[in-house]
Image 1 (cartoon, rainbow, N blue to C red):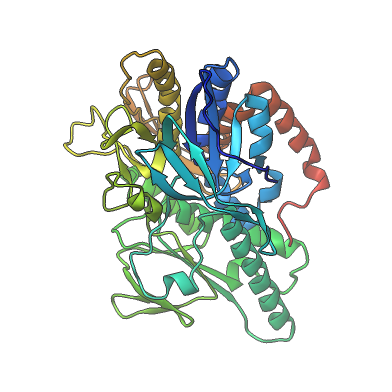
Image 2: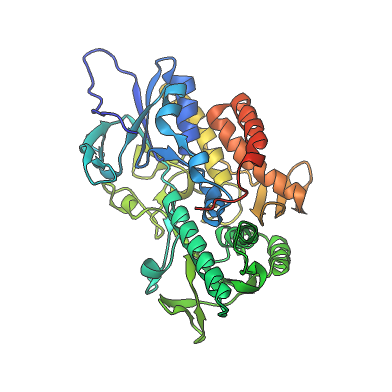
Amino acid sequence: MVTDDKAIVPTAAATPHRIVIVGGGAGGLPLAAALGDKLGRHGKAAVTLVDRAETHVWKPLLHEVAAGRMDATAHDVDYLAVAYWHDFRFRQGAVEGLNRARRELKLSSVDDDDGRQILPERIVPYDTLIFCVGSTTNDFGIPGVAACAISLDTPLDAERFHRRLLAAAVRADGEAAEGRTSHVDIVIIGAGATGVELAAEIRQTTRTHAVYGLDKLDPARDIHLTLLEAAPRILPQLGERIAKAATELLGRLGIAVRTNERVVAVDEEGVHTADGATLRADLIVWAAGIQAPPLLAKLDGLEVNRANQLVVTASLQTTRDPDIFALGDCAAAPWLGRGKEGALVPPRAQAARQQAALLVRTMRARLGGKPLPEFHFRDFGSLVSLGELSAVGNLMGRLIGGSMLIQGLIARAMYASLYKLHQASIHGYFRVALDTVGRFLRRRMEPRVKLH
């Protein structure tokens, strides 16, 4: 759903300060909602959220969408509805350019599924501009990745993988019914959180697929899952204890884990590694690296690093324009207090959430002419989902005096609570509680996995 959308034109009368947020993800949408509540509702600022999509799906859920455990349409959030509830405006369109001298953002036209134009190119003026456009997959220029592998960057990518997974399983089941030897080979390149979580979800959802009529397919025997990682261990960005626990759990699920395996090419035959091995694959997922969208490197001279991230100061202001801020995966923010020169805040959802909370205070200080606060990242630990009934991770904080490894049902419950906290930042706790109860009551009326 889109709206006819014209640029905001200043009038002779005093106009509210114009805050434009680009990107409605884990940081951008809660930020827009909070600023709309605190500033927009009281006429202190005009808050606008810009995103190329019509709806929001929390990105950490995409591995569940890809495996089929979750229907993206049942968990998406309509930007226009949230804008109405929280007193901000939504403008759909991809960013095409930036004019810092004129303080103008250029948006692309918007077309429908048949290619017909709904909205033309538009100009959105701003006084304060905030980028929180997240990250995309980085294929490092490896041949064949773009053509032969799927990356889980968007809900459409996740749904495309799910359809291919179902088709491969049905095809293998049909071949087995005819007495032929058949199996499905899935290779996931990159054993970070996305790769590990996807492998575990696929193993568990394919077991459920068999219950719904794939009579000849034995998921444990006929669906082969291989996780490749170039580093010496999986989950290289997280602690070694988490990696060890996750490796043991993946082994119990029958998932082959191959570390120190650098991929040099991907083609229709499969995945080719630096040591000369070729892994046959019916489905290939690339989850080996991330970078900020390349567009950021073309924004009217703003400073970016090698990963296309906007370089920002401790106040999250870009180094070359104090009227432009950045947060989340697209921002190269200094990790104050880390003790290591040049350390950057890690690209995690919890960092984006904390930065969004800081920017609410920042905007109020900016409007009041007060000094801007600095961002100090607090690492509360990491959790990795390993299916419906398990997770592994560590908690960090003052209460436990360091870090504590957790796993199993407790870790899974805590992992699920992260999504509930994200929902609460948009809808409020009361609505989230009602939605949770409603979904629980409907569970027996719905299949356990998406079957189409």
